Length: 274
Image (cartoon, rainbow, N blue to C red; front, side, top):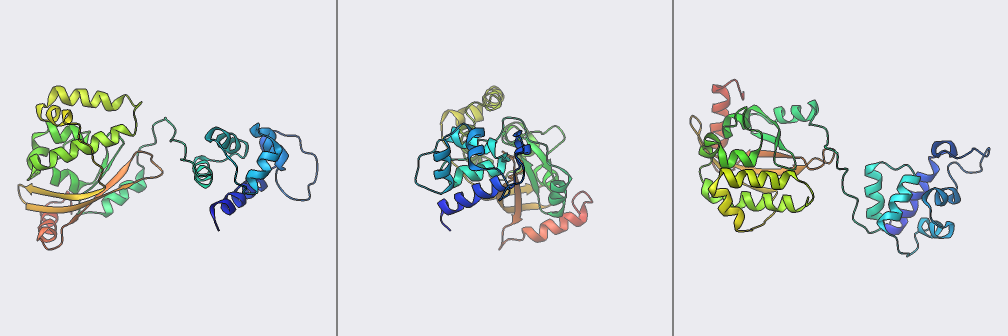
């Protein structure tokens, strides 16, 4: 099916699942087919009946995000369905609601714990540490006072000491944070974090002034642990669609190194991660 056919079927099925009472309209009795009529959807959305009919038929007509939002409201679509409707119409989906998403629940904490003895954590959109497993805390030197990955990278001596090649990693860290901040130009937390770090770290201030930007969901970290020695990880950051702005960062021992064996030995030594 092409996109227009999918749009046609999606609108028809969403209309069919509603009754007049669901949207505050009087019930005119039994209907030959279930659901709202096209005329009723058009009235609720504030658009012409012919125009809505053409849209539902998958015709090549122009449609704005505002009109799609009105149709989404008329059809009582949830956030996922509204995003899907926009994509079918060839538009970018609406931005997530401004309200802060719920903190990661018990299910995600169990995912992190299942990743042991490998490190894993969840970052929010501001790089706040929303959840960590015991291996991440032990291997990266994260303490209870560390609430933000970026801030810890530039201000925590223990966290900094864990990174074998800290100076080489720092420019990429700042460039990725700048890319994330650009996605949310109206979010006041990003400039507040930047101003705080500029005052706390001359190194961050110098790198931020370079105005470099990059995006990467995968990379490599070399860690020097006081008992485990040199540990080399590949990491992958995966977005959490149910928690907008959050991503889980999973670390795997780099193949061809003895990181896996060192990690297992460290796990046996410490109950924190074993």
